[in-house]
Length: 86
Image 1: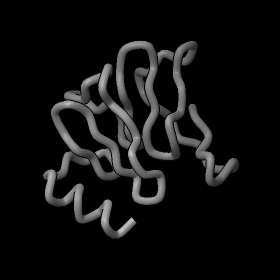
Image 2: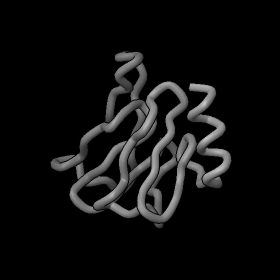
Image 3: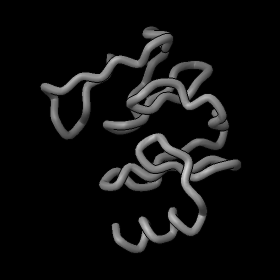
Image 4: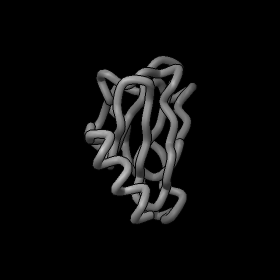
């Protein structure tokens, strides 16, 4: 489980994550020693080495393959739109 930084009373469970190595990246994303997770579970195609949270307010993230918004893959154009609004 990880606690959302914005609300310490709210907890999310990352199913199949390794608890000993799990680290919350923000209130929507986390990682263990091998995988990246979003609120809804494993981000199957996320690149572990290059995954990074870009904006906490609108939960944008990216890796070398994709852009993400709340754990869903979005286009580069959508990513840029969200960045302009943030």
